[in-house]
Image (cartoon, rainbow, N blue to C red; front, side, top):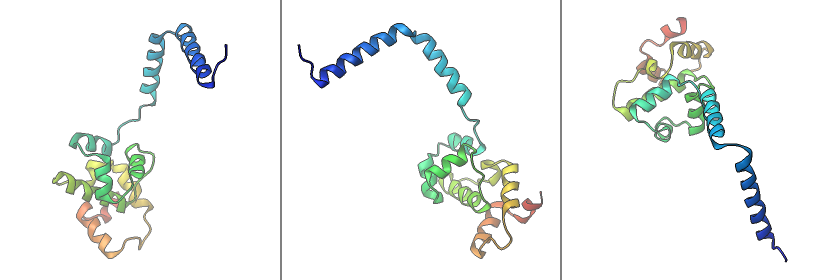
Length: 146
């Protein structure tokens, strides 16, 4: 009897599947997967909670803000810290998407906002960016001292 390459691969996969069914029970496998998923689940940031509560899709926010979806994912998971101009752009984009008065505090914690202003260098902002900052933060220089 001759086996073709395809029939050999099919036979091996059938054998591997039947052996796997006897070795581990599916109930234990499901329990371990759910426990691992619960441990690795990230804590929701204020930005993530805001997007979920208002039904905003990350792709729409990316289009409105001008940032990539990958960059926004890192922000939503809290892996990176935003700059003041990034915070302002996201607040303006969320205002356009929700048609509500969104504040920087709605999207980011006070600590993140403080750190963004602490890392900003003098003369970093262009005049048009400074106008945008005042629209988002009010008297935004007060945040740097907080």
